[in-house]
Image (cartoon, rainbow, N blue to C red):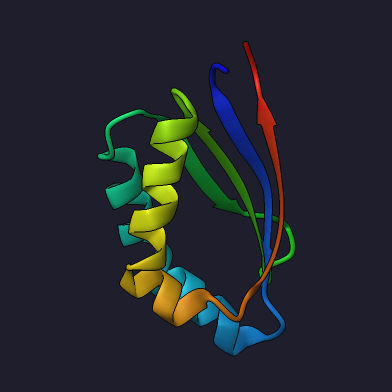
Length: 93
């Protein structure tokens, strides 16, 4: 299996959740981009200030799995885990 892509949205329920994203997402992006095998990690707020569009690419399943392990141990996850996520994972050869 080749490149793993994750696309989707973070959907905040209110301004408090949006403040959590604004405060903690930048460091999560920086750390994710520094991971071995991370090819792309982008996040941007949409026209709706409660919704962020996310696009991630990792070189293979092992790199994506390592990212998930690091993510679950991060401050980002501790602060944002209650925020709704609508993500779709695909693999390319």
